[in-house]
Length: 95
Image 1 (cartoon, one colour):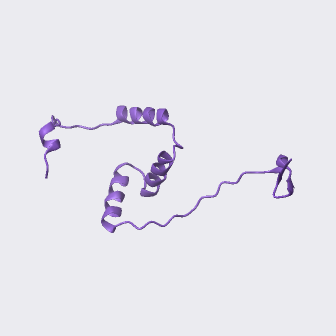
Image 2: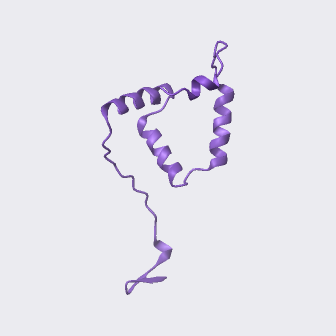
Image 3: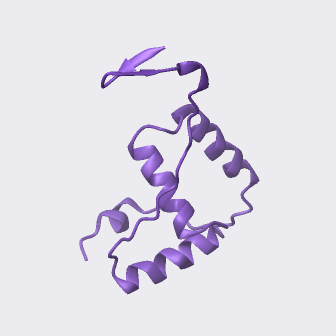
């Protein structure tokens, strides 16, 4: 039993409820459209990407788990660069 504000609270019967909050953001239409395209290509949603970003921002995600997931996905990737390689000068070229 604990006391809060002069009231006795029986902690044996306290339950924790998780509440999800809807959040309204102001984001440019072009940014949203591009984000939707990228999310679709990744097999996810903009909502999920924002949720994961915020969890990462506040430290809720596990970096080791994230690294293991990245490694797993990298091994499953069927990408083909067709011989193209990064060119340092092109990457750093000011446009």
